[in-house]
Length: 295
Image 1: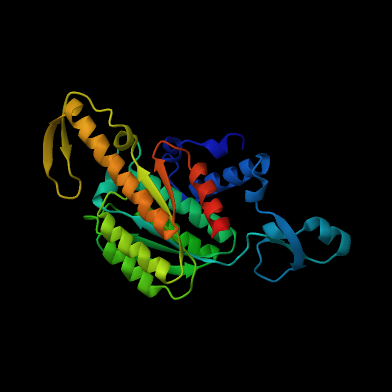
Image 2 (image 1 turned 135 degrees about the horizontal axis):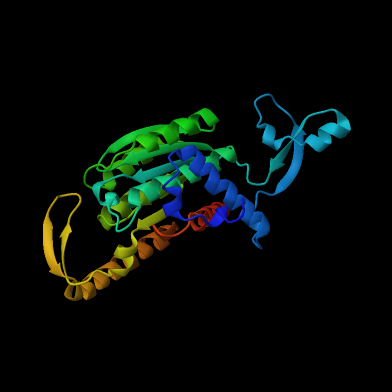
């Protein structure tokens, strides 16, 4: 479908079913990759193997079947059967939106697309939804039924309580025995020290970690005008400020926070991608594939 790869998040928000949304994003993205100069990031064909009952019919080479009357399945370079855990922050701050889409909605769109892509590649994929605690935990599996279970849990998710990164990250790190990938999706606006300690725990146990920071365009640009009242979505506290006066202070603090986050990730060998909720999801999927190849 032409243009699908660059479908806007605001358009995606009108698709009620997460499975359809994920399929739309991923199939459009893969189609775009095959037409792009990034050949190394496509799912490259490697060799055949005999068909085993339960294999996805999509991977059967029907031309080979017509020639030989035998079923063969294409093996692909990226079929690594890796274990992947997708962690999504559903804390109060993720409920913010200056437009049609909250950060949590965008994060769940991204998580569903990543889960769909991972299961398509036969990777065992798990899901963790958290705020100050782990609220939902689905251990990694690679079946289509499990994918549907993950998508249903994401569809049911509600904005939670305050952000406390440390406890959920340490809890998941302790639960995971097999090395693999951990994908953390959050606005990363909480306590950087707690985040850093949790990330160190994953790296100590040999896991590759990929971070997607989701921010609203107003959080990135601060284009508010005049006097405006802000509300802390996690505490309910409000503050009336002059936007012009606050802009410089806010921008300086955000820049300092971002630099510290980048330094933390760089020191731990962790890939960090910062996304605006206005950006198409293909950018995130491309960075995910790049990080996997590097890992």
